[in-house]
Image 1 (cartoon, rainbow, N blue to C red):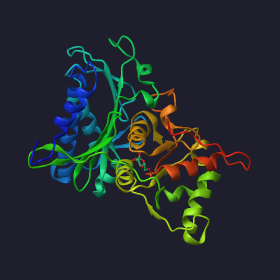
Image 2 (image 1 turned 45 degrees about the vertical axis):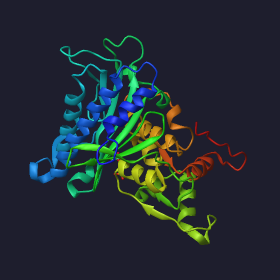
Image 3 (image 1 turned 135 degrees about the horizontal axis):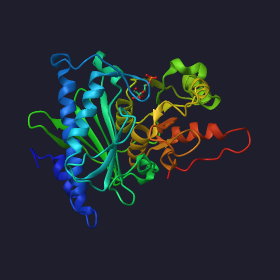
Amino acid sequence: MLNGNITITQFIIEEQRRIQGATGDFTSLLNDIVTACKVISNLVNHGALVGVLGQAGTENVQGEDQKKLDVISNEVFLRSNEWAGHLAAMASEEMEDIYTIPKQYPRGKYLLTFDPLDGSSNIDVNVSVGTIFSILRCPGECASPGADAFLQAGTQQVCAGYALYGPSTMMVLTTGNGVNGFTLDQNIGEFVLTHPNMTIPTETKEFAINASNGRFWEAPVKRYVDECLAGSEGPRKKDFNMRWIASMVAEVHRILTRGGIFMYPLDEKMKAKGLGGKLRLMYEANPMSFIIEQAGGMSTTGRERIMAIKPDDLHQRVPVILGSKAEVERVTAYHFDDGQDTRRVSAA
Ligand code: P6P
């Protein structure tokens, strides 16, 4: 306890006590991840003062221009998590192949996937960005796991979380026992529990989508957004508000805090390029879906539960529709509403 608040370290250890036969391995891994996020927070907060803004002059596996902080944040995650012996391997949005633990370090029983700096196109304009991570168990013998060891459905995650580098730096975590939020106390350099048991309101009047893609949307998405825009004069009989920050971590955090629906749906432009969506399953959609479901929300592709997807590629992209359950159910139902039967996709 610090000033009456439970620290994230104490919280994690108390969570560990809940798990039969826990060895402290997981707790120590989570603390190394927390340390990495503190280092990234410090770099993001200092920005131009420490020369970390601007382009790196390289591209990532997605063919996206990397910011200097994308590369630096990725290095911070690797250095912070490779040495302690909890991980068998790591996978990142910023690296084409998996990162196996160097020979000089012991290997552990977990796998870590992460997007070290999500929303980094916002970094140079000083808008909130974040880190997203997910922890899986390494299946079978973990001496030298390949990429296929990571290809597990989202339901296999043992932990998911994000750090949000905003007006305050926060960490939000789930280990399958609800969702809890922690705020970084810069004076002592420790995250303290400030948002226990975060839950998403079932209903909302706020939707988030990049409306500039509107002409490419599939009919069910267009129908849903048009109904929101029609407001109280339309079939929804209530007015809606719209947000788009272009930083998934910030959107998800707003939804966890006050409800809402976030959509990055499949569209005709993506289909023409043979893409399955914009967002990546292993280190964006799955961890965020775990958090959203644990907070009482719902997360689908529009056609199926995201956490049920059996991945076939480390950097697989999927459509994402997540947030307040009643709205996600509605959009998903529209995808099946071919005028005959409207099937519901079960949340769990
Ligand atoms: P667009 C950031 O690059 C990201 O992966 C998510 O954080 C964000 O929601 C989305 O892409 C923004 O995409 O097309 O609006 O730039």
